[in-house]
Length: 175
Image 1 (cartoon, rainbow, N blue to C red):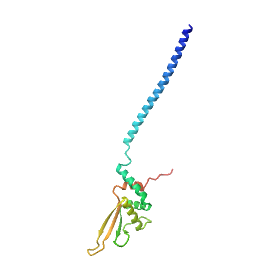
Image 2: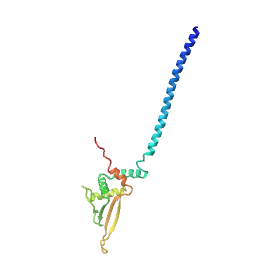
Image 3: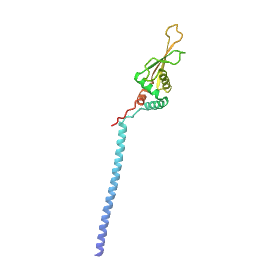
Image 4: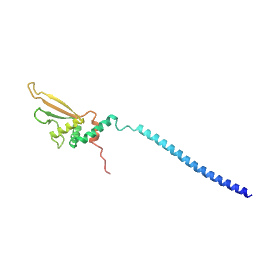
């Protein structure tokens, strides 16, 4: 009789240990399964968001932005003022007579800047390909020996969008 009760007791304890062990293994495997499913679903959602979200810039725009950003660091604050003015007005025109010194602005210059400072800033920007210049030679009369040279400055093709983004960064409003 003693052996039967020991056998039943050992069997019952084994059954309990087996059930508890199976329960913990099932919980562990279930958690692993849920975790793997969660990671797969998250990866799928991230991929969908990436596909639905347009890129901030095209490679061409990114190149122009990087080039403009590097150039703005080199041309200085006066050039930034001139570029903002040029963006607002579209074209700045200067007139030069050979042998007479610096060209003179025929357009309104930025507030607080004279013709020489504006011209020098535009030349720096032209050297860095931020603006383009178009030079026109005009003879005032057929017998006129010295021509007049007009220089028109505009923001360079492909740089407008990058410059607008860099020259007018978004402002953060304080609460």
